[in-house]
Length: 309
Ligand SMILES: Nc1ncnc2c1ncn2[C@@H]1O[C@H](COP(=O)(O)OP(=O)(O)OP(=O)(O)O)[C@@H](O)[C@H]1O
Ligand SMILES: [Mg+2]
Picture 1: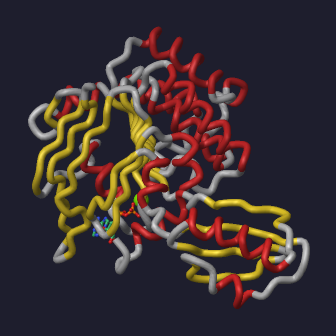
Picture 2 (picture 1 turned 180 degrees about the horizontal axis):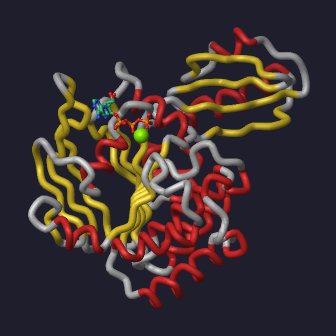
């Protein structure tokens, strides 16, 4: 598969701190790549280097086959950007912003007009196109910025936390637009710290921590990769002793939550077998028994905690 983004040893140093520390990764054609990390991890800095806003201090990157250092204009023609902070002029209307963007990318006027109407329709802003952006709500502004990023029909779209601070409706609208774009072939590089979003949307995620890439994989695989501790949730039809549960094979802890017991174990299979035997021996019937998969949130927390790589 072709790499749409190929980053090798990407590095950025601010003063005496290394914000991005020799990170390497590929983003494949047609995928939604989630770029996850806690605040200050280096997500925006990476995005800004890749999109040519700030220079690299070391390393190389190619976008759609063009080196971002030696062929920045060719690289930029192929991608659109939804930056972390709005790039729309608030004293202009949505329409004027789109026209300006069209000019920037060298689109013919009629082409820009046609494309702008189409995009405004897509993001549900056609009727508000002649209103100044300063009168827009946050969600409307973000949808406009997405439209602006798409004016030149880029093959690749960078988004830096596009749904941050938006309500559920605006978030859903943006996510569903991203899914549609991806289905039509657009490759997406999505920066977020929202695990749920990444889990639902992304084919693969890369996790950055303290400027270093700590994991790159499919969300499901990341979950199982950290699945060293398993959880089992069980309830019985009568009172049982927590101490007795804690003593069963493989069990490292038993905590009560409501009418259920949450059991952590190092050996799921052996613990389930001994729970069944325990029930039989104590005349307690099992009412519910669930094994709990770790969430992407848990994977993320583990991978981004300094002491637990
Ligand atoms: N222009 C700059 N000058 C100095 N330091 C900077 C600059 N930009 C970013 N940094 C530092 O680089 C590190 C990474 O910042 P960056 O904005 O890339 O993080 P982030 O992962 O995008 O975080 P957030 O989730 O808060 O957006 C931080 O320690 C930040 O303070
Ligand atoms: Mg950021």
